[in-house]
Picture (tube, rainbow, N blue to C red):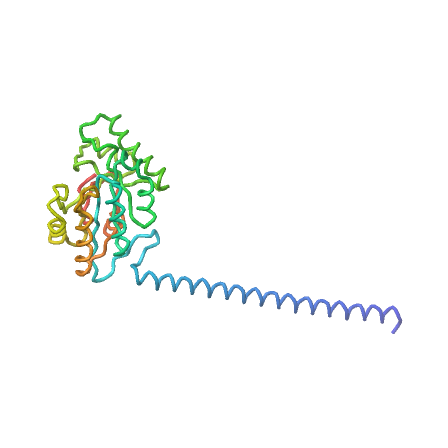
Length: 278
């Protein structure tokens, strides 16, 4: 074998070794990547499992964040009109938080702009804010411009404070006509009334208010209260504790209705069981 042939043969051997080493290194890198991906997958699975386990303790949520009905449980929505009221609304929020309950507050724009910190606390603690007009006018008596102003001015105020869009409208006194329903639909809102009226505005006393709610409420009901009434704070505490003993959970209106049928823009709801119309 000539010197040239020996050198060429040696070169071929070195190339083969380098190729073999490179393949070995590539295989090591691939195996390392596979281990990393497997570890990442296991981590995601573990976190998901823990998340579902946590939800099992506090109520399952669907992909949109709404509560999923659990066998053997009953659900109800407490709603409060005419606030926010310094003192009363804060006390109600304390009670809701202490009892792991949620509620919906239909606020007046003229009071909301005076107490933005209360409005922010309402949503920060998992409750809901709805529109109750700007200054409690009878919406069914207004012309189109006045009606739109009452709804849009309050919506913008609430959204500016909470950072969240408003999808629920409760007309003062529950008064509505085709114009009010049409304006709500145009604004992308549903109209929420109630089917359990505690008449707390007449100030009959906390025990009487509580008894009215407890005795009349069934699964899927929407209860009307007012956070500017003195006795409603104590009454709410009684209502929540007593109905919880009977297997009730307290949800926001949106959560309650989505559990049964889902909200539709321009529809009117008295409870979570059936839309009254569009």
